[in-house]
Amino acid sequence: MDAEWREDQRRRGHAAAVALVEDGVDGVALSYVDNAGVTRVKAVPVARLPHAAAWGVGMSPVFDVFCVDDSITAGRSVGGPAGDLRLYPDLDRLVRLAGQPGWAWAPVDRYAQDGAEHPGCQRAFAHRAAARAEAAGVEVRMGFEIEWVVGTEESGGFAAACRGPAYGMTRMVELDEYCRDLLTALAAESVEVLQLHPEYSPGQFELSAAPLAPVAAADQVLLVRETVRAVSRRHGMEATFAPTVVAGTVGNGQHLHLSLRRDGANLFAGGPGRYGLTAAGESFLAGVLESLPALVAILAPSVPSHLRLVPSTWAGAYRCWGRENREAALRLVTGSEGETGETANAEVKCLDASANPYLAVGAVLTAGLAALDRGSTLPEEVAGDPAALDPAELARLGVERLPETVESALSRLEADEVLPGALGEYLYDAFTAVRRAEAALFADRSPEQVVAATRWRY
Image (tube, rainbow, N blue to C red; front, side, top):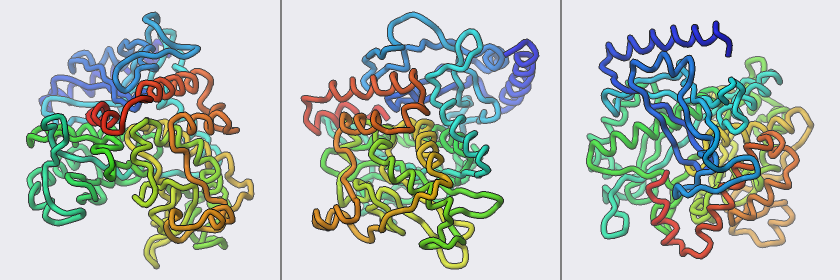
């Protein structure tokens, strides 16, 4: 970060600030997601954007070990009040927030005061994984299915904002102005929405956004959730993306779709393998499947995650794959005949919004790229619900239940040959310290108490 770079940033920040003022913007929210999956923020008046772009905004590194309840733990490398970091807004992702008039937003990269990249920056981890894919000649596109529930807190419990049936048009009628305003706001923010529909649980909706490059896809998650929250509040409701909103019911997922291309060709279509998989595409998916028990520590990392990640709820509770199998943790989506070359993709289902989206995209990419072109093959697919199979058949297919606790998932992550090294010592230490602290925090609490404590944190 030399003087020339800072001056260029200042000029770009100034030009952006002038445009924002003309649009009636007064403040810019600069946000990132911590290791607990909580979005943290610093905001600056729009007049300070040029300085923030050139010199960053200060924030303590101790936020790397904040837990979901805002208690603070410590790792080997981080903890305590000393030190400072700088948050640098990505001006290419700067957006005027249609759901919050007078505000704009940008995601940030985190650096030390000397200009060195912060080793705990989750967005930097995602950038590194994306760069490895590019170096391998692979174009990656990722997109999230974002689920949430709208309602209010009443007498210590949750009251859904609508009564209509699962996937029912009744909900769209009950909340028609809300849904319309949400689509209008996202369009104004240049978010391409593929679909919006009611989901299974009371008051639950799902939105699928168009796929983007990996880091941009994670950025888009933050923007969509910010917009959903804002529009919900304007309609007198609260939105929660928590993995479990009411104990014992189907919770919120945040499934990740991904597609790979090399030399313009879809690696999940047009090949000699099952359902048209190419050898490289199958190797990538085999790498993800092999690492799924370790990936759960990152993709479903919280205590309430494991209240959601249960069999026979389309959550992907078993390490297996299958074409269009919504119970498999890894689902191959081939698309309709005639458009497979364009639409074939894979879905990782064991993912929810308590995961840091940058860690999620980086970890899935890391696992898949480690096996790319290695000649790995997928085992026999599972066509139905794995929970309906007897233990002998599960063993024959090599299917296992994914870790059922935070601690067991972290043990599988620790034993993984690829992921800890890719995260780096500092980030791995901070992340695991937070998740172990949260496991201890909720160790003696009932599911109802866990849900009550986390319902409005994500």
